Image (tube, rainbow, N blue to C red; front, top):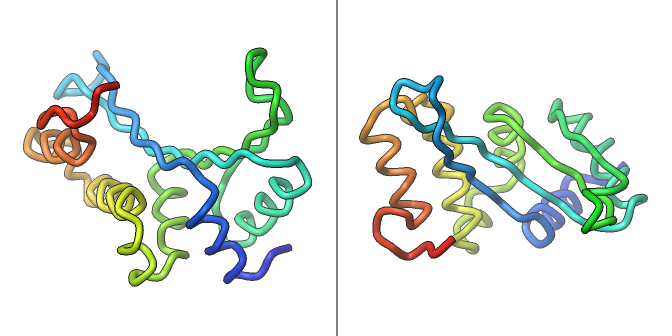
Length: 138
């Protein structure tokens, strides 16, 4: 088990913070939002992170092989509640140091407040992701 300070350090340095925005016929607005935190690393470290996150009530999954083209271990934190709990572990003054983590936290907080269910909320998420302003070329 890792102590909280080491876990916060790992959460600041290692993960990829993703906000997936995709078309969904089941959604009233036609879009769904899914937050993900992905950590890649060696298997023993990912198992330690998994156990430590579980102690904080954060559900996550570790896969020994991500896929056929990328045969490396991966830890994934899915869902609004689990992402919110994870972001709550990181102190506010550290969130502000890295822009992409702060943006992820802002979107997760919007999801917690259910702002993504309104048109202005989806537009704000698209602006944060850079889709509307044209800064994201994915």
